[in-house]
Image 1: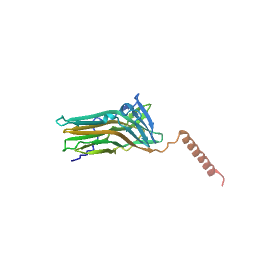
Image 2: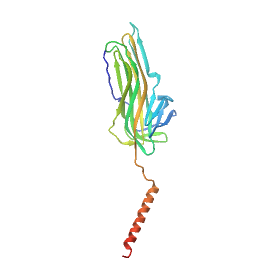
Image 3: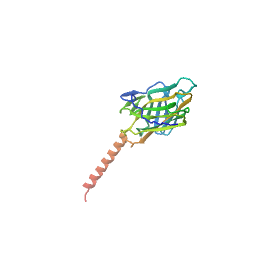
Image 4: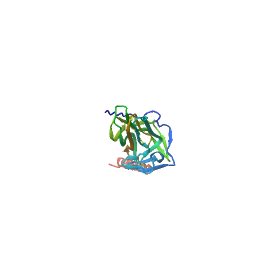
Length: 246
C-alpha cells in the first residue's frame, strides 16, 4: 500500500483586482474580535458559520461528500464536485485596527480509499482562492492590491482511511495592513475507483484565521486645536518672563 500527499497553492484565474462589489442580496455579517466578516450565503450556506476571535469556520455542504462502489467486472468511476465564488468572504477591520494579507486556512473531513495497488483508487480535496487588500465602503470592496493565491490540496490512495486536517498559511510579500480584505474561493473534492471496491471522501469544514493589528489613534481636530492653544499660552508666558524687570 502507498500513500501520496501533495500540497499546492491554487493558482490560475483566481486573482482579485480592480473594484469588486460585495453588495450581494444574500450576504450575512457576523462580528469577530477585531474584524467583521461578510460572507456569501449562496456559496457557504446560511447558519453554517462559527466565529472565534478573528477566525471563521464554515460547515461545508453535503455536495462535497462523495462515495462510489465498483462491482466485480464493473466500469471505473471518477467523480468530482467543485464550486467557486469570486466574492466568497470580505473581512472588514473594526475601528482602530487593520488586517493584513496573511491568512491561515484549515480544511477538514474524512476519507476511505478501497484496498488495492497504487492507482486502483484515490481521493483528493483542494481548497483555496485568492485574497486582496483594500477598503470597504457602503457594501462595496475596492481592491488596492492584486490577488494573492492561498490554500492547497491533499491526495491519498491505496487502502488508506482516516481524518483530513490540513492547514495552509499564506505569507505574502506585501505585509501592509488594510481596512478590508476580500477572498475568492474554490472548493473541490474528487475520487476515482478503478478496481472493485468502495472509495469515499467528505470535505466537511473550511476555516479562515486572519491577523488584525491595532493602529495608533489619530488625534481629532479639536485635540490639535487644544494643543496649539496650549503652545501659544506657553509662548506668551515665556515672553512675559523674558520681558519682566530683573
